Length: 526
Image 1: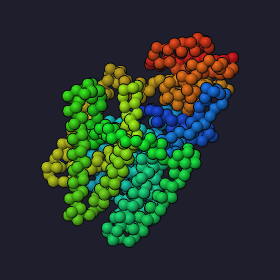
Image 2: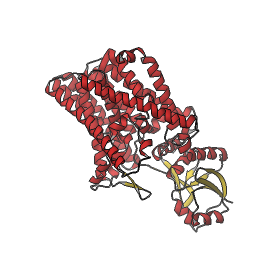
Image 3: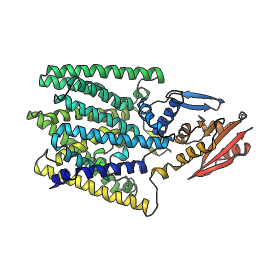
């Protein structure tokens, strides 16, 4: 009955899921510092200054400098460029691009399921859409680069599946596998190891199957992947001064960071952040919830590994077995990279209290999230015994039910109570307002310098026509006279410090606008 429902209503399910995903992206599309930096670099690229960030130093406010940024390959700029034709508002452009890539991701998942399950792909994809229709998980965790990169990753898996099944042009599929996994690495460095290990897995499977043609195709895929990856490394080294993000890590051992491991498989199916924020950290309830989430995560992970081992013992080497082998490689690389970075890098501290490390960042597990969604759907729709199938459906039914309740609760607060906390328009209002004010008040002949302690405010100003001052404290505390004919906007959050008061009084700062806790002042030197 359940399978018949998925098959019969697959078109309405898909359409509603896509519409609700677009609505979710519009309302809750994030703007963090990572995204702001890449949007700023794209703006400078469009204006002929390369994929760099613009800034001025307090030592010379007349000189705009274009400096490299670390942590990301250049892919984001390339993917978002076509959308800048549609609108010159970079906030709008980023949301449009996110929606487009979300649609392409759904297409990729369908094609992958079609390759794995043939005529049953409709019901598998319907369940995938139903699972993600109302849920904030997992897409809530994805920023733009995560969404773009995992889309390319899914297409790489699709071409891999086509290749292993000897469908269509094998050589073309092998090259497309290498190309799409490279496009993922061009978007996020975390996929860079996969550019080598995915082609190697093709060679390994070819040797296991004693298929010489598959080995040759794997070698072709490996050569292409190596050339592309080496080219990316060379570009990063020459253009930014470092070939990979890992080179910048401070090598020391910090095994304690692994205690912050993210229970990602639980969060893949249940979005509980809002409710957990109401629970006191360190309380018995909080500890019990964390333990349960980790137990759920490791139980599902163990079952995946155990099932793969059992099929290997039984020589059940069908396409799903090889797909799971590659999935295991992707899981190992994703988790292993995060574990390595967390061990060799000290935790980043915010406001002296909150700390952050790689293994706790949910969005970094994007490949893991989608692989296990597909895996649980396979369990629920027939790849298991009756008890396991029923248990898998209980998890999926619970996930969908919980998602509907949370979706209803969230939209009740927005539509009925008019409480917008947590939405893009409320949480990022200060940055949206800054962009609007810059566009409204700036003219072609006036250069506006932006001074703020908030790095996101400074970076946002770049793609809105401003130029950030590199060191806020240095500017505020300077006793040197600011050059003539300069316009500086200064953001003060909450109560102004004595230094800010003195600086604003010295230059007769006037209020331009307020947004939330932020007050923006303008000073002009004539």
